[in-house]
Structures are given as structure tokens and as C-alpha cells.
Length: 260
Image (tube, rainbow, N blue to C red; front, side, top):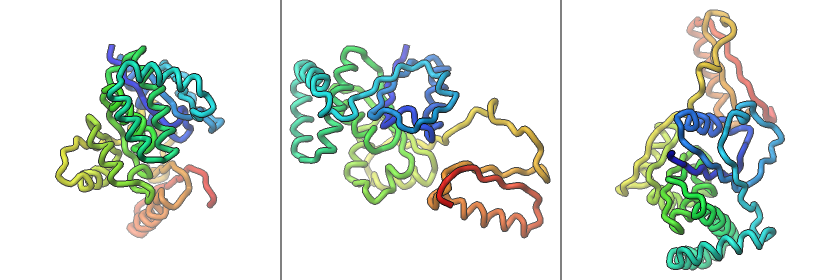
């Protein structure tokens, strides 16, 4: 049976239903999924769909310095099994003199050692930030291939370092992103470097989400998301104004929460 390790910053997370749906579909297709979470959940709310997931969840030490025995034992075993790769990655990490980079290296070593005892065929990381950094380090430590899904903040935020992002994409087997705009942006960033970047929309189960009533005029526009500027609800409202000017009958419902 094919086994894929999911590397996630936090699992489960209330807002990340797309990850839950993805794992459920993989399980439905007979793929064994193992989840490595870099943080323990802190949302306090959980979707009912989580009860349907059968995948094993392994919580990586969130603060490696607070669990030195677990970290040291894992790294010792990993160093003995792959000395050349270990010291290469260790040296590169130390040269950065960055506590964040050291933390991810320690977490990556913990996961890599676990994978030596419990092999996987591939890894997939959601978001091109910390989860993908850990997957990239594991790849360089023990050679397990990885793929990643890039979303928004992880590629567009001012804090994103283009050289670092290009390196993660360069080493990946393939990259999934959620829109054509994202795909074009990443392809342009990679310039002439070869990269397999695919657009794949976040899907929903249409058997579970069906209209329970007929809206006025037969047309319902539904938008769900956090009520923050970057979600673009102002654009939706302006679009609805145009539809009203054109004499079209419809209802628009916005579901979410925020400051406004």
C-alpha cells in the first residue's frame, strides 16, 4: 500500500477544511496517510469530518529544547544511519545562525528518524513555509521525495524570501497551487528553471453540500471566509451591485466572522 506522509504546521486546524477533505479522499482511494504535525492544535473547535479520518497523527516536539532526550536520541540514530547527509545539512543550518532554522532542523531530524523506522513513499506539505521547510530538510537528510501545496500568504507575504521559496520548489517533485494566478506567479519567479507547477482547486464533496431551498429568482451567491480585507468581499459586493443594476434577481449570503 502506498504511504504518504503529510507534513503540516498544525493539525487539525478549524479553518483548513481543504486539508481534511484531501486526506479523506486519499484514504477513500486506498492510500495510507501518516500525519506529522509541527504544532499541537489550539483552535478548540473541530469539524465532524475529523472523526472519519483514520490516519495516524504524530505530534513533533513543538519546542525541541523542552524535549531534549527525544530530540537527541532521534538525531543520534539519524546521524549514525546517514552521516554524510546529516553533517552536510547540519553545517548548512548552523551557518545560518538562525534560531528558527535550527528549530526546523531539529524537528526534521526527529521526523526523518521516525521515517527510517516507519518508511513512507513520499511526503506532501501544505503551505510553502515551515511545513515545506521541514519536508525539504527531510528530503536532504534521508532522500524521501516531497511535493507541496502553495496557497497565498506563504508565497506573497513580504516576509517570504524568493531565493528560499525557489529552492523549495526546485527540490520538490511537483508543486500544487490553488489558482491560475498563483501558478503564473510561481512560474515567473522560477524563470527558466524547470518546475512542475500544477493548478488544483480546493474541492468540496457535492454529495454533502447541496441547496436545501430555492432562493429568490433561483440564483444564490454564497461566499464563506474570514471577514478581512484580503478575502475580497468588497469586490463581491460591487459585483452584486452590477447584477442588481442589470435587473437580475439573486440572493447573496456572506458567512464568516471578523472585526467588521
